[in-house]
Image (tube, rainbow, N blue to C red; front, side):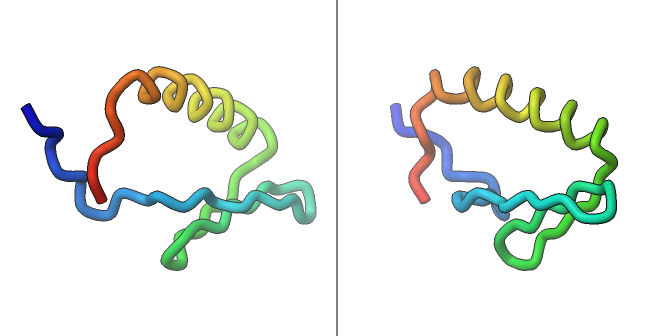
Length: 63
């Protein structure tokens, strides 16, 4: 059984986070940008790490 093709728009490059004026800015590939409060960024980061750890148990889809 082969893996399903990746979902359109799936990012394979990590974003870069920075802090400015008490906010967290996340710049991703293809112009993706998100601004969050420190609390929102912290909770999002925890959630991303937990989800990534679960997703690592699946084979990575072909690009």
